[in-house]
Length: 388
Image (cartoon, rainbow, N blue to C red; front, side):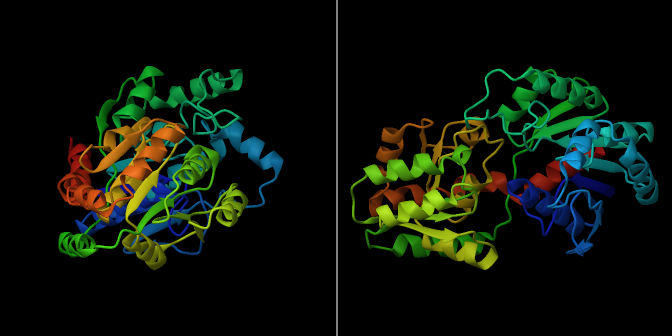
C-alpha cells in the first residue's frame, strides 16, 4: 500500500510521545514493505529518515508574529491557503490511505480533500485538540477544565464540521475515544482503540530483568521523565517525595520545561533529589537501566501515557495517577495506582517500593503484560483497518 502519514511534527522535532509513536509506525510500515511518506508542518533540512520520505510545510517557526498566530488560528479548520498545497501533494503521491494524527499547523481540511478524491481517511486521536483549543483540557490554573469558555465551544463546533469526512478514528485509550464520542465527534466513523506501542527485543529485556533481579543492595532510585510542568505532576511528586524520610531512596528527574528552576531549587533543599536535564537516546537508556521505579504523577487526562510502558520495557514497576488513559495501563501486579494530587497516597507508594524485595516482586511480572504493546502487533492492527 501507498500510505501518507500526517502529523504536525516529525523527526528530529520530537515534541513528545506523539512524535515517537508516529515515527515508530511510519518506519514499521516501511519495514513491512509499504510505501510511506510523512507530511509534517514543521521545519528541518532532513527529508528522509530510515527509508521514510518526509515532506515539510515549514509552517511553524520559533519567531512567529502575533498576526501570523492569529491568522493560523482562524484558518486551522478550513485553510484555503494550504489546501492547494495539499491537493498537489496528494495528487503526486497518490496514496491509498491518508492516516492523520495531530493536525494543528496543517488543518483538518485534509479530511475533506481526501474524501473528494475518494481516499480512505484514518485519524488517530493523540490529544484533545478537537474539544480544547489548548489540546490539554486544562484551565489557566493548570486544573482540569470542567466548563469551557465561549471560544472553546466555537473551536469545538468548527472542528466537528470536518470530522464527518473521516472513515475510521482510532485512539490509544478508551478514555480518549469516549471523551470525543461524548462531544459527538466523528459520528460517521468507525471507532477503534489501538494502544500505543514500543519496540523491544525480548532477549535483551530478559537479560536486563535477570541483572535487576541479581541486585541485592537496598538503594532504590525513583525516576521521573517528562515535561517539567504542573500538569505532569512534578511539583506533586517532589513534595510527596520529601515527606518520605528514608535515606536509601533517590529521585532522578529528567526533562525540561517551565518548572526547571523549581526542580533545581528542590535539589538544594533535599539532597536525595537529582536533576539530570533533558535526556535523549543513549543517555535516556542509561538512566532507565540504572533506575528501579518509574513514577508518572500526571494530573491531567493523558491520552495514553507512553512513559508507563517504557517503564515496563525496562522491567520497572510503575507508580502512576489513576487518570485519563494512564489508568488503562495499570495492573496491580506491576504497578501502583494513586489518586491525583494525593501526597499521602503517593508517599505510601514510594514507601512500599523503597524495599528491594518488593521491587523485585513487581519487576518479575512486567514481561507478561508488555507483549500487548509490541510495535509489530500495533502495525498489524493498522494494516488490517487500512485494508477494510
